[in-house]
Length: 72
Ligand code: 9UX
Image 1 (cartoon, protein in one colour):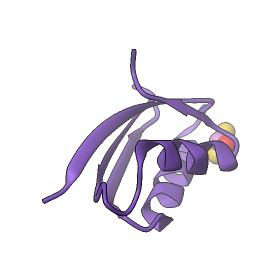
Image 2: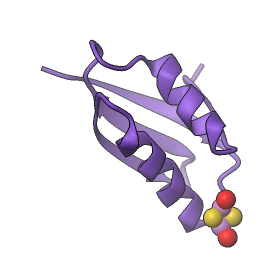
Image 3: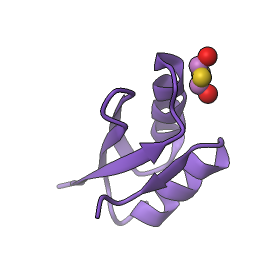
C-alpha cells in the first residue's frame, strides 16, 4: 500500500519547469509516481512512506531551485 500527497510548488513558469519537478521527484527512492501541473502549481505524488518523507520531497524540489510546501 502506498501514500499520496499533493504539494504546492512555487517558481514554475513554463511547462518544462513541471517536467523538471516531475523528473526530480521520480528520481527519489520511494516515489511511485509524480504528476506536476504548471497551471495549478500542484504536484501529486504517490510514494512509499517507509522510504521517503514529504520533507525529503520538498528538499529535492528545493534542490533544483523551486519552492514547495504542503498546502495550508
Ligand atoms: Mo521554462 Mo522553468 O523556459 O525553470 S524550464 S522557465
